[in-house]
Structure formats: structure tokens, C-alpha cells
Length: 405
Image (tube, rainbow, N blue to C red; front, side, top):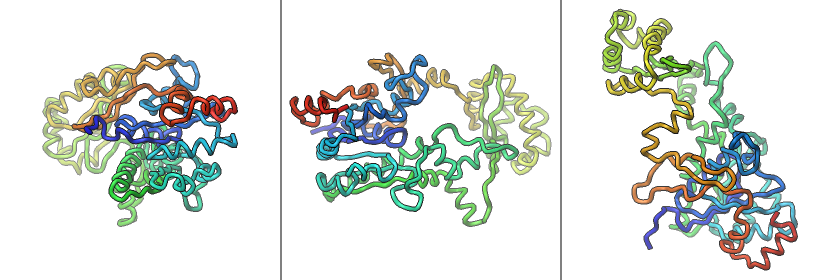
């Protein structure tokens, strides 16, 4: 049978919440997997309560973050405080190929839904756990979010200007970089199961995953004992290198000149003004020594031109450059429009809205956003009885008892 999507037929029990877990399982969902989010009305997941909200009206179904991270999925509710919840959860686990969870280590064990317990009823389960610092070790039970993990990994320390306090990257940074690692690990585990019939437990430490993105700085310290410091927009291997002001209100363009050829092209774009021929700017080494003066001269030119024009002219000449875009610019960007990066969805409560598509495209089985993110418990009836195989009588009984909350 020819499959339209690479993960078509894959069944995922998604106990995860907030960032890394939901983003990871959306990769699977957009590639055809049936992903059931297991949630609770008594304790809605954190991201359902996080702004921004559509029309600035708060509600568990109106969060922009939640709706972006959870498209193409179903939502069912299960009251884990109820004595019968584990019975229902294990039936979900028997159905699933993959279980995803992102609680503090110990939470799933408290519910007797840890890997060893689940594999008793589903021996070949791919059990994916993601947490702040992994499932083992002296700080495994320390809780936090991507903001804290970015600081622990050293990312915050090196982000900003040398004469100021660390600025840090925007938002829960490690939540956005770890899902790439997670999706690859799950795909590898599925391939291993296909070849051997065996499942396994994947333990992703968001802290450790973030370290991969500082590998050159860690190597620099390990080999040379040189500790990285904040450098703003400066680079030791490019000059000019920075975000320069352009015409208009708060408009900027990033430019990076690394080689002699790029410097010659940069000069041509500017019209080869006299200052570019000065000896102090003749080589990269000398430009790095006179960065402040050079940046002021570059800014004097860029400030007279629109950011998109600066970007276009630089790129056409072979100089790396990119306009700094805001949200409206991104939604209007012709490249992203061509790639259909912002599909329009019609949500039952939020209404028409745009979300991010996946950034990669598989040529033979491209991903597709198949439906908007679910309202809390939206698919209780259809999923419990239609997907999981509970009888109508069982479903009504579980609702009446408060197991399905």
C-alpha cells in the first residue's frame, strides 16, 4: 500500500505539554501520525493559558502558542487523579506505537505509567521522555522552562553586549531547538523497532541538547582555555558585521562581510566612497581593529535606504545580508508565501488564523497541516469510541464517573 505521509498509520499517545514535547509530536502529526493529546480540564496544560490570545481574550482554546504547536492533533481528557485513570491510560498505551511525556521525572512513575510499567502492556512501545535535565542525575527533579535551560547551558551568558548584562535569546529558547533532536531520535527508534521488533526509552535532556548549539565555544575552552564573552553583533571573522539602521521607523538590515571579494562587492554597492579606500579598512584584520568607526560609516549609508533595498542590493552583489523582519513582514514575505509556510486554518473558537508550517519538505511525502489545534477535550467521544475502541456504554460510564473530565 502506498502511503501519502511518511508516518501514516503511526499512533501516538501524547502526554506532553508546553514546548518540546508538543512541537515534536506535531512533526509526527503533520507527517500523517494519529496523535492523541491526553489532557485534563481540571488542570489545563500550561501553554493553553499562555498569551498571546486571539483578540486578547483569554481562554484555554485561544492561545496562539498552543494553536501553533498542536495543529493536526486530537484532544481527549483524562482525570489522572481518578482511581480508574490508570486503567484507561494503559488502554491508550496498548493502542499507541509512541508515548510522549514531558513532565518532571517521577510524575509518570507516580501514576504507574513509567516506561517499565507501560512496556508490560506494550513491549515494543517507543517511550519518549523530555525534561529539563534528563531522567537521571542529582538535578533530574529540578523543574524549569526553556528560559532557565538556556541560561544553564551558557546561551544567555554569551548573548548580548560586553558592557551590559546578558540579554539572552528570545523566549524559551531550548524549547525551539530540541524538537529537531527529538524527532530524529524517535524516527531512529521506529526504524530500530522495524528491524528488531524492540521498543526503547528515549531520554532527552533539554539542557544537554542545548549544549550542542554551543559546541565551537565549548571546544574553544576545552582546547585553548579561552572563555567566550558577549560580543553584541560583532564577529571575529567578518567586518562589517552587524544589524544596521535603515530608512523608516525601527527598520534594520543585517550585513556580514567575510572575504576580500565580499568587501570589494560591498564597496561597489555603496558606490566606492572614499572612506572604503582608506588604509585602516583595507583588510579584515584592520577593519576589525576599527569596527566602531566603520560601523558608523556603514550606518550613515544604510540609514538612507529601505531595509529591503539594502538586502536586495547586497545579495545581488554576493554580500550576505538580510532585512530584520517583524511579524507583518513575515506574513507578507513572498518567499514564505511561495513555500506556503503560513497555512490558514479555521478554528472552532479562534476562527480563521495562520500558523507555521514545518520548515522541511520531503519530496515524495511532504507534510501537511491537516486540521487546526483541538479545543480542550474536543474529540472525547469520537476518539475514545472511534479511535481507541471503547464502547459507547464504557464511554458514558467513564464520563459519568469523572474519569473523562
